[in-house]
Image (cartoon, rainbow, N blue to C red; front, side, top):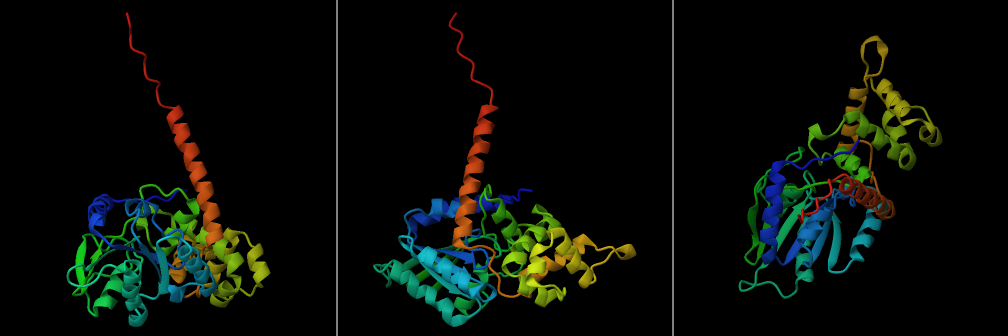
Length: 313
């Protein structure tokens, strides 16, 4: 299954970013620390090309600390880019982004040349929570549903620091299948864009190898890490559903309820601090995804009718 979600308001966001970025000094892209590569928008990189970028790896308190360190090193090694990790609800780390922006654009500041910052990110990544933390009040709507913010907002964080908030935006085509599942697991795509059971199975396929002890601690399956890793994904989902009482008539496991339970536990952090991808893994996925998409485009072109030659009679 290929997961895709690009509702109409995202086209408007794309246009708004294209116009706004002309007058912007620094671009902040917020990422989900549990899936930093998958939550980085390639379309945004294209739209903001040439602008200094601050990668804010958000929700670090829910992510694997060792893997977060790998991602910070990965992004900090890129030109004109800085990366910091934070939990958007914590005031002190959140304010560090203001200092980071002035480091990226040291010639800005003061009433004559105020800092102009565009903050972007995928839906449900925590932008509004961060803005409210910076402002010390409820300046932006928040929620756990993708697509809460629908219009651009201009917010003055200081007399010489203006922040432009945009609605969360994905990209028109997700070419990395693993990213589609990771985004769905995190709640970044609309509920009607994916099947819960398929997403839960893909999620468990990752967790049973990298985080098997956490699965055992949460669901009390009575299995060793190696035994959990050896289970088929369907078997693991069934075992979790049976243990947690996600049952249908006759004592059979209700796959839908079991899937919803697993996804909810991941999103809430009940499973523990988890990161679904490393920079090395994502680079490999991206290469394969781009190659597959190129082949798809070639097949599409080959099916187009050939242009008729002009009649020279």
